[in-house]
Length: 158
Ligand SMILES: [Zn+2]
Ligand SMILES: [Zn+2]
Image (cartoon, rainbow, N blue to C red; front, side):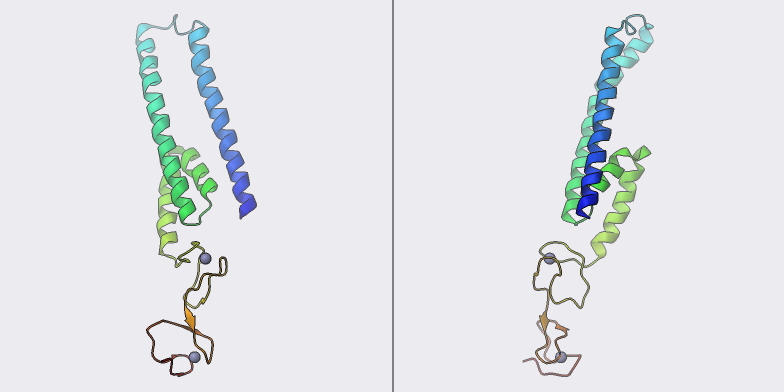
């Protein structure tokens, strides 16, 4: 998982750099090549509106990206992969997919300390060693703290 994360991180920054260069390059070349001056007045106004709206859109997209990255990291999901999907999938479809996956992911039981996926019968988190449940002294199965008798072997617990 760790190595994939690096690949997604790299793809994300390459795409972001290319987009930024194309965007800034495009705007500058439009103004400095004299194309802007030779445009009809209506197009000039349209371009000026785009120039104002574009930074706002970029800001909103960056904010969404930041929130998704933080949220995915908290849920032990592949944060860079989801950031990549959410930002670069067309028409915001990546954000919708992320939200669907995120809520199904949240329903799964996870370690209270590190967020690693666990099942009900785990005594200890396999990743960080955090104690999830006590175990029966006789049969070793997982038991809840308030149980009086072990349901697996009938051992009296208290
Ligand atoms: Zn853990
Ligand atoms: Zn037992």
